[in-house]
Length: 362
Image 1 (cartoon, rainbow, N blue to C red):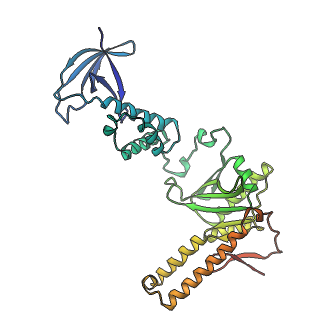
Image 2 (image 1 turned 90 degrees about the horizontal axis):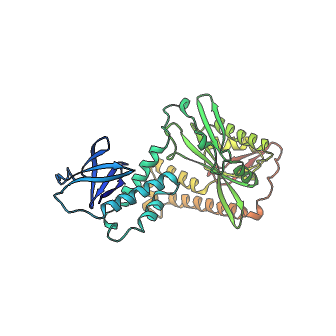
Image 3 (image 1 turned 90 degrees about the vertical axis):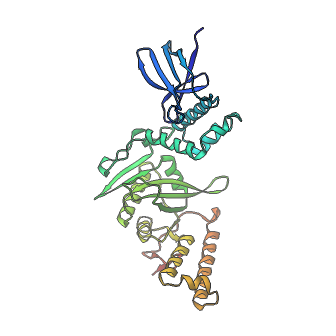
């Protein structure tokens, strides 16, 4: 009676043959005949060998040479679980921890101890996904967004604009449904992140909108890959968003725009959305205060001398900032976020020194 052998896939994507409880790797092949050696030939100096004949899509065992160690019955099952994890990594957008958890919790108790660590499995998922991605470009001229990444999962256009300003480039991503939500949001929150962007870009700038659904919620709606952070670049982004809204009969008129203390973004928002009130983030204001304390050489005094007059003044100022922030928060309830306020005849909103609320210069 013919003895058929199962093929399993290794963590690195190579085919291995399961023969009588042993895993064997391909050594060579000649026509339909495949020559296999033990997976532990180097670590255990095992001389185990096998020859199979590939017929009708199956490997039929022709010859088997004994190994110098006992078989590990769990090894093929481990390889099967690892391959399932890799298949999930290619076919889903789930987080690595979710994939590892769903694929390993059902493993038999006698197999689980032989599985690679969670860290190793997560790295395997990242390796598979990196191999599936296009090669990262080396210059801005090489940046070309694949067609499948220019659309949402439902097929709606997602890349709004690809802007070039002198030596800079900006890619604006949002769907029409996202811009509809943004037009309905009276409060916008804008900020950039620098650690999760491709090498050629400076930041990923995100615009969030506050919407009233079953509760008051903040949603990320627009994503902009930018190679800089000048006022001109921010203005072009806001202009492009406004043009996209007009083409789709949507009006972007926020009542309140909240940012960090980046003046270029504040000034650009004030220019393009003159009716909006500019607010600064309390968290970023506190960061600025702490950096100023350090730059003035007061960090030790601030930490160690509670009774210092300097520390007292700084903390009074922070308390005032917090009180103003609390007042702003109470004014940003869903019921109070009505239509944008009207422009008051050329008056401009200027951030105060502490960066909390804004004042109006007549």
